Image (cartoon, rainbow, N blue to C red):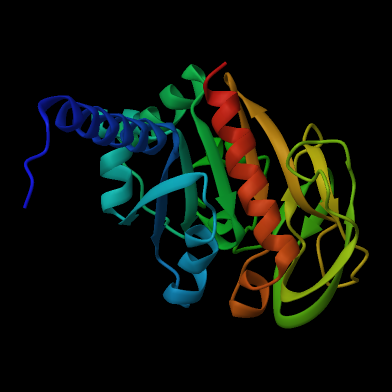
Amino acid sequence: MEKISSSVAAFIFLVLTAGCTHFSFAQQQKIRVLIISGGHGFKHEAFYDVFNSIPSITYDTVVQPRGNALIASSDVNKYDVLVFYDMLDSIAPAQQEAYVSLLKKGTSMIFLHHSLVSYQNWPEFLQIVGGQYHTHPVVVNGDTLKTSYEHDVNIPVKVENRKHPVTRGISDFDIVDEVYGGVEILQQVKPLLSTTHPKSMRYLAWINHYGKSDVLYIQLGHGPSGYSNPNFRKLIQQAIEWSAKQSKK
């Protein structure tokens, strides 16, 4: 076998090194997402397949209550976007302060589906997300809200803002998912999706400004019929990509 000349060997080394550097750079450019679950069952494989299909991200997962402990630590700073798919009621004062502190710095948070039920005894959570599913009747502006839910409903979804980066390219669609009724939604939220389904709250996705952050809430996403809907998948991808850009401003 002939020996490779030193010049050829050097060239091969440079090519390989450049390739590795490019790969490393590409990996670094991916959006770093932390997905927080816990407190509510779900189909793990089908749910995480939504995120596996997004080429622009890399993600870690954590289950509550470890999620709140991580959020209250410096480790949270390595993530570009926090995605909540949890339903928890217990949160320590120091962890509450951590949420607020992060949002005052502009940290991007996306709350999905049943995360709207979390922290019934922490009033600030309503102000952070822009709405809440109350587990007991509450009086809001003189009206008594009694929340409800129903599984496997065919929901007609209207795109309220077609120009927003989160909903861009998505037309009105139908999805088989769970509806929530009687939910409190703050007046200042900016709607992205709505529905006319009589058993559902009007808005299905919105943006709520809190601190220096634009917090996203998306009500859709109870189970596999929702996860597999291409419009839901596009919505999640664009929500993460837009949120990551907001955190870098």
